[in-house]
Structure formats: C-alpha cells, structure tokens
Image (cartoon, rainbow, N blue to C red; front, side):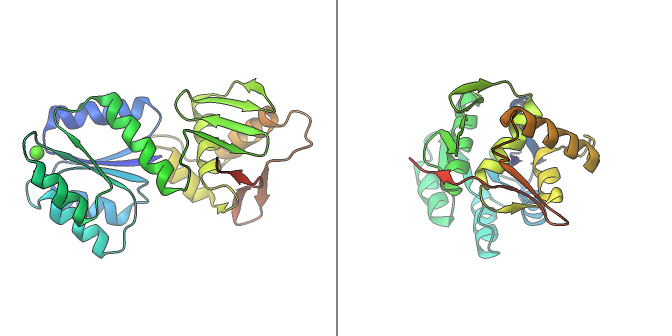
Length: 227
Ligand code: CA
C-alpha cells in the first residue's frame, strides 16, 4: 500500500519510513504541513500518518484541509503525551485513529493495516475470496487449504487485488501502489509478476482468479467474503 508520513522529527520520521518500506509499502514523506498537504492531494495515498505538531501548517489544519478537499484516505494522528485534547480535536477534524508518542513501530504498522482494512470493508486480518485466503498479519497465503509461497512483490500484488476484489484495477493504479519511484515500473515486469501469481494461485488453470480486461486493467473475479 502507499503510505504518507508527515512528521517533522527527522529521526522518528526516518525510522517509521524505513520500517514501512521494509514491510513492502510505498512511502511518501514530508517534514512540514504544507508539503504533506501537497503530497496527500496529488498522490493516490492509501493511508496517512500525521504528527499534530508540525511547522508551516499544524496537523489539525492539515487533516481538516484534506477532508474539506474530499480526500477520504484513513488518517492516523500522532500526539504528544499529556495532550489528550489534541486527540479529540484530531478525531473531530476527520482523523480515524491516534497514537500517543513515544510510538512503537510495530504498533504503527498494525494500526495502519487495521485502518486500511476497515476503510476497504475488511474487518478481519484474514481476507478471503473464493478459495484464496490471505492472512495480513503473517503475510501467508492459502489456496483451497494449501499453503502457497509468494515473493514479497507477488504478495503485495495479491493483497492489493484482494482489497479491491471485484473492481477493475488499472496498470497505473497497480504501479503507483506497489512500486517506489526508484523501482522498475515497466509494464512488462507487471505482466511477468501477474503471470507468476496466476500460476501459483491456480496451477491447474481452472479457477482463473485474475481477469485481464484489455486496455482497462485487471480484476480479481472472486467474490470477497466478509466474516
Ligand atoms: Ca512534531
């Protein structure tokens, strides 16, 4: 997924960004409110982390501005210890959840995942569609009860398709949510990854879980099941 991190404390921002990238996310980062506002308005962000104490534009104003502009991605705010009023104001401004500093990286990641799942209608950490079951906490995938070994990229691709099950996802959507700017965005690479993913999910070629819609993109054909 694509995560925007808006935090002016350099060491904290860097550690959050590093952890999120290592976990396979695409990350945009900003050290002040104005830059954060710009990135959140211009890029297809799936979830944002916003420190409330920011230079140039306070975090509360940033959250409010995005919401007024119709940006609906979930927002996790970071507040300083002892400033409980801020958390209430942040939630009122349109944030979805909060964490009090000092934060633990694992907790940040868990909260972000939960926010994205909730925003996409998945309440449970396990997503299933047809015979495919994906556990977002362990990043394990099972098809018809059999464990399937996926590479990090294949997993991310499948997770994105599962979150958007039933909907058409364009090549550019996939590239923007799955690759950093540094990574090869060649659409041939995407084709190869998809072909491999299809073989692993459906070795017999009978289920055909991922459809290609010429000129439009891809769709996970299976019905998604909400527990
Ligand atoms: Ca700060």
